[in-house]
Length: 428
Figure 1 (tube, rainbow, N blue to C red):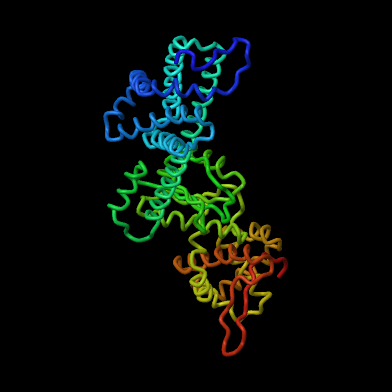
Figure 2 (figure 1 turned 30 degrees about the vertical axis):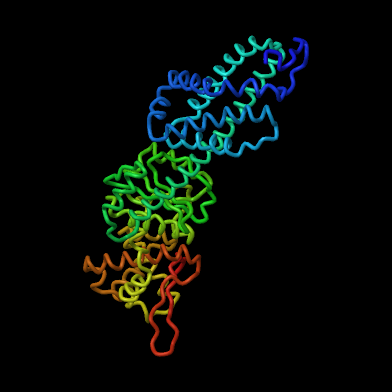
């Protein structure tokens, strides 16, 4: 056996190992496997614990398959490697499940290769193998280890991807439960918090994103819950939106329009996102000025005044019933003057400047309004209701556009309803 393979000259180029070399390698496998096991567990104690655990036998089988497959490929280069490939991918998945990086497994592979190369040198000396042949062996061995690492990395990345997808699904489920609008079982929320590692805060701030979000993924803080796949995309930020959180959202949502709801106790999270979505609707309607990140707290009165359009119509019909019988042109001028007076409580000169009319015209209109409305402008409660209606109608008229009707008076019989327009007008 000492001269099974003819020695090659040192100057010969590297090439594939001769098939006969497998016959030299195969008897060395049992003891080589043990030696590699000792060296690897000494260098990586975590693998020593694994070998003593329930998965120890599977790991040993995997190591044997990897070494045996190398020898089989030397003997027959077309030998199938299905079992080896599957085992290497399992090793990679196992590293991901254990929460480690690929560094440890790569280190173990390379340490095993060095042990095998050290054994090969001893065997080569006893068989008088040429340096060129030993270099070919080393080259083939480390190329093979690269294949093992590549296969394991496939499994590692696959497991990471599956884990991330499952984690994201669980976090979306958690977000859905918090926003469900009905009392969710605390045990269900607690269970999802435990599975995802998310701490349930006392307060939350919801952020509504205009659909379609056109964002595949967001670079947000780890504790922010996100659902971009929903028909109305949204985010949940634990606690209030401080400066750091705001900067994070502005960077993450660059190019998208979003509205920040109020910070509320966690059980009221659905209210926060509802208000945020309503702000986005009012932006689309032209009532609220557009901006990349809009805060609900800056538009609370607007939200309140326009929270129920049908109720606003009823209030308007009641509060402005006194001017229903007046001609449209005169009615519009009087209503606009009334709105300015309620807003400013200014003098005739001040109101005239805002209305672009002479102060005497303002005095004439105010006398007319006192006659028409009577005690309605004296009673604080009635005056407040009238002012709220006029503010809401003016906001709504922004969405309708200049000249569009903001309020329809009830008609009598089959006659169509008469309408009041609120844009400011000049003259009497």
